[in-house]
Length: 309
Image 1 (cartoon, rainbow, N blue to C red):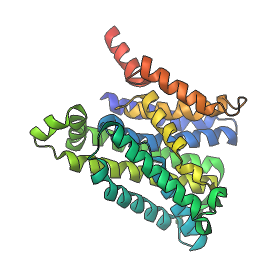
Image 2 (image 1 turned 90 degrees about the vertical axis):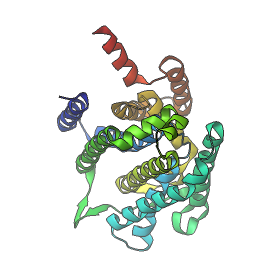
Image 3 (image 1 turned 60 degrees about the vertical axis):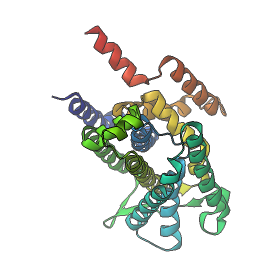
Image 4 (image 1 turned 30 degrees about the vertical axis):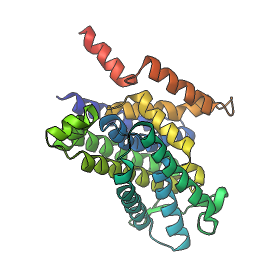
């Protein structure tokens, strides 16, 4: 059995058994938020870890999805699934439009461009108060699927668990496909990739659009799950949190994305008694990870276990 298939079976078993040990709705809520972040980080890791392209404004796409669902369902009475689809397509089209000029840049210029994108989205969400509620945010109706309303942390748990499993499976298959091999090639050397016939620009744009699509869908679902959304969802700090999850879990690691999301979603709960220190903790963890675990937690452990055999 391939290691990837074994990992998916283990993850499935964990998700099936978790409801038996979670004591109350509070813990279901934490696990649900872990799953939301894990799916976003999976898409972001495809961009950063596998393709080698940075994005410091990825929370903007999450915010687009969240507010698309909030605005269309609240102000225009759209069905939630239709609003979710429009938000995801809108985020993907925005990514498609801005990717070609952005990915002509390299290094810190690319980082600044993606940072600017996230800031612009956040500012728009704050200023369009007639639709978005401004800095105070707005409420979001419950999610209805095929006439059934999803309510309560337990029902949401099964939806998020299914989405997480599908996302892990899809990422594994994508990575093992010719598309995934092309991504790894351009991460290693864009010049060498071009020499062997890889259309570098096309692959950069495609993976950026795909990761934006991931983030927007989870933004929509998160808005319905929480029942409220604010512009904080699209702010720079949220982007940094997502980036930290990628780095800590392990760049170019599917299960590293999941582990990073789990650990750093749980961190604010562990620091609940130290209000205001979450940002400092994220910074310290990112710095320590880059120094002592440059490949991330999961790849480092896997490499050490491999050497012991």
